[in-house]
Amino acid sequence: MHTDVNTLFDNLWQNYLNVTPSADKIHDLLGSTQKDDIINDHIALRTFNIEKVGLEKLAAHFLALGYKECGEYHFEAKKLYAKHYEHSDLTQPKVFISELLVDKCSAELQAIVNDMVSQIDEDAVTADNFLYSGTHWQVSTDTYKQLLAESEYAAWMSAW
Image 1 (tube, rainbow, N blue to C red):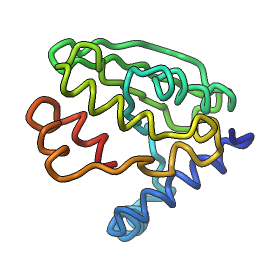
Image 2: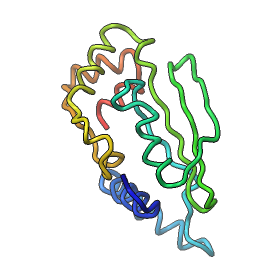
Image 3: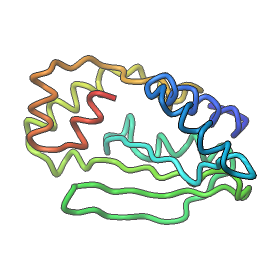
């Protein structure tokens, strides 16, 4: 895991730019109209409530950098649970991590998600780059559509 919070966020930003190239232009445009550079007030990460990749596994990357848990949220209709974290350095962004409660979904969705997660190497989850390493599985268009029919969140996770 990272030992410097700024390095983690720099890498997260670079990863975001790789998948959203227009973000750099927008950042420059907005930044040029402000006295100070733009500050991200928060980031949001998604996962599944499966032990290997659950919320606590993602949170560990931030807790190791001085973040503290500050709140929890239940989104029952969407079958989501979430927590947010804050750093003592208030210039650092808040971190919001949500997880799909896979066990509350259909057996079909559970099977697909469990298969995807089983493809992740155990050591990858604690690696420095895990939060910006992309997917660790492959899904077909048909599988994506099957997930989408039940959960936009699960479909998004399968693709990203």
